[in-house]
Amino acid sequence: MQSVRPNLKAADARHSIRSNLDAAAARPSIDAVLFDYGRTLVTFDYPTEELLGVLRRFRPRIEQAIGAAAPTAEAMLRDVLMPLEEHVESPGEDEVTYTDVYQATWRRAGLDLPTDLLHEILDEEQLCWDRAVRLDADAVEVLSWLGARGIKRVVCSNAPFPPEMMLRQVTANGISELVDSVLFSSQFGRRKPAPEIYLAALESVGAAPEKALFVGDRVREDYDGPRSVGMRAVICTAHAAQSPPDGIPTIASLSQLPNLL
Image 1 (cartoon, rainbow, N blue to C red):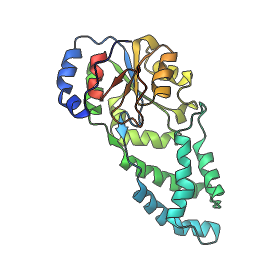
Image 2 (cartoon, rainbow, N blue to C red; image 1 turned 135 degrees about the horizontal axis):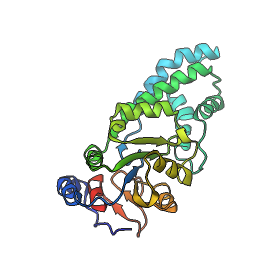
Image 3 (cartoon, helix red, strand yellow; image 1 turned 120 degrees about the vertical axis):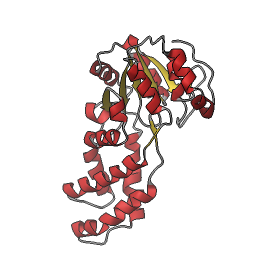
């Protein structure tokens, strides 16, 4: 693993992005860069008010379906949507079938709803997330820089939500146009750090592990996992929920990525 320059503050890193890109321009040494999605290429805040709005709009139809008064939107957020977050952070390597989990969670809250109504609610909920997602400040420039130099760019990320909804999101925010391949765990059936998902992502662009770098925000999924199949890896701390332990290579922002190539 190449040594990584000491971390800069995010603001300083953005200020120096052009010099970083120019310095690395003559020496790309890998064929592909794989990226985690959430908290790496994009960031977000939990869209509480938008989700409450969705639940309020669907409440009359929920009451019609169950033939009784429905819980308040706040209660449904607390008892249904919030518990579903555990599947986003699941440590298991087998991905869940999210529509089954979604239906079971509504039932545990005492709401046995028709499948078509559940799908409509889920779709509207995910549209809230589509609007909540924000691109990292350096993502577009760095992904464009990589593409201009023939380096393949791949999204490889855990996301249990229906694949068609996740692919809609990366189309809406422009990521799909800036990468060569997208692989979410819900498409593949396995979650990082399962070795198979990294290998499938590499295969999608014809890259060998030893000629690839993984960039993400979580040590287990985005550093240990990729290294177990022979990739290089680095943690980007710009949006990370936790700081990695000492000894784990880091960059403060995506703007520093070209210095590693």
